[in-house]
Image 1 (cartoon, each protein chain N blue to C red):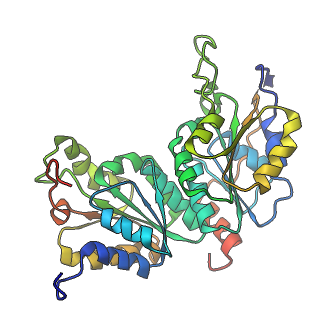
Image 2: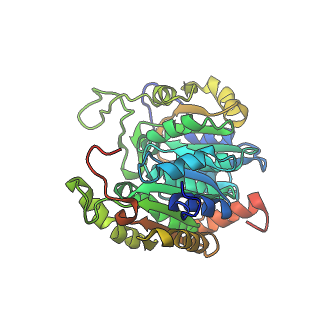
Image 3: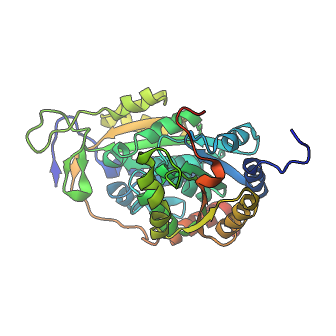
Length: 209
Length: 176
């Protein structure tokens, strides 16, 4: 089921499948709770994915800690607009460090998907009594925080460039991807946090991890 | 300076952090931790990360551990309240976590606004499953922080060291 909102054209799962296509061991992925977590798992669960089932507001800071610890690897954070809105300050924290290997992609459908699609602050103002937000522009916020390479992607034709940037452009980079509101199958990764952490460390660090 | 004087406890903490191969140090500006933060900033082996809010430090610590590095979060008792939900990560992911907390709101505090979180700090940390180790005497700081680091990085625990206000000194209004 898809709901057409003007300006929201992209399908999140298709975008994430492209972002995570043919991953090698140099690609470390952290996904925020909720839909982003199911999206990366639908693209193929792997040990070097760290899907979060909780800790709203954690992914960008966690990605920064990982990027600083592993400067030779690419760290890709994929999360939603609600999660990003809860941790706007972490964008300034990233900007202060300028990690060259960190890419942040926010899948922005202007809704809190896990709680029933209430409007987030990225939803337009004057959007009716129950769906109005602030029109908050996450890309502009990231840029103003000091992440110079920040942009918003709306068109299917821009996805290939997005994927190239997310995988290889010199970081820190920040991309907002405006995606449509969809009801999608839940594709769940393992839930045990210690297991997720241990399999990640073993895959990255070897048996000592 | 008297050559025979005991080393400053803040310098001793720095030596303990180096001995335990701490590679990332997270902080907000804090008068109590200022000397330690500056020592870390000058260190070639430590990356310091200034935060906008203390909860970022818990998530950063989880990320650093995923990447194979040890870290420590420096904060004030008033910042502990900002971290509580994120502290849950230490339990769900079961990763080693060490935080050093300068206390406010203990007896002698002049600022009434510091008392609620200061008095609540040990209770909320314990409620989130952290081991809480208070230290009030300068002579005990080195051994306490070292034991806390062992509990964290050898024993896999989440540990908070409370540097009591008696140790730091009571802040006076207008005092630098």
